Image (cartoon, rainbow over all chains, first blue to last red; front, side):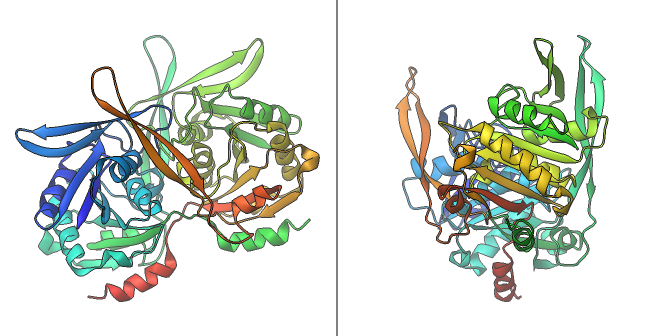
Length: 251
Length: 251
């Protein structure tokens, strides 16, 4: 397959390079990724300034193209302007840290895959679910195996797979589970400080809230040692409430 | 009510100021908005740098607080650090231009409302659906009227209302419709240019695709002269495909 790879940790991050190396054994891989880290950029795109695509080499090895933009920019530019072959699959990752629950709204990694989905390409976001000790090799091996077993053409339009791999050795992984996005989120706090000029400024930090019951949630799978595969799409209508609201707002 | 107002066009944009003025007749309004335009920032948050909150005055009039961050940052900071009263409602807007279909993934305006929803506050995003000739007064009058008629406590957790108001005079508006998010999206193109140093760079531009049939879509309502009210939530699981995938991936 021809695979377009992007991420939000930047083109020099280990996650994307380990994945590129693994997938290159069986596929043609084109890396188009942000020039610097763009974590928590959400589904931002660059509309007011142009984008540069800079070829990156390390020694005599071609790494890919570095873009002064977001993961969604990279997918658009990769598919529409850089690749000269038909891309079969877009993969975004391997992200450093989990993308579970409401993380996916903030995640640049996930937005790269959703951009691929909106552009009607099969798309996968992949994360190693530990910020401090990610195991990219485990996640890379899983993705390579998954692509051998699963026909990515079965992914419906506008839908991407959000894959979170526990940070374990391959032999410690219990298997995979198809899950739903949980309502995992953060309780945030701001610490107020004073700058040397007397102005207040604020640092944000937060703690995870995981109060979503049920074994079918994304984080329950990861916590139990399973790879979580959540099919997500670009649509957010709350249909249950939509019907109630129609009744309520009858003029 | 105590209302927290934000937007993505920046604190000096006309949309947010016209809305603040209208709502102040009946409510207490606190404006916490980005210091400069942050359109198409998606649901980005600022995690690597601190945030400054700068009081903004024009003449002897208090405008609110300008933040060096995104709409989601403004909502977090407004609710958790700036407001000293309990906020009843978060409103993001009035945006210059529509937020319909997949626009809502890229929209900073919508992400401000979704952030409010994740923080368990009733939340509304509001847009005047014309980039070139927005009619903010029409949208502001509608929101004020809507808040008189509709009990915002009925909005369920994690859900926000995405309101798009046609750019018409108030008397030309045909009414409102509760709608679903359509698959409206852009077909993008890149124009390649050369900078004075010989490097390629790319400008992105696009044209709207509106091929979603059905009268219940967000853009069909706006096109027919109705205000579109779409209840959206922070969840993107494709449940239909989830069930099929479970079957397919049985080990």
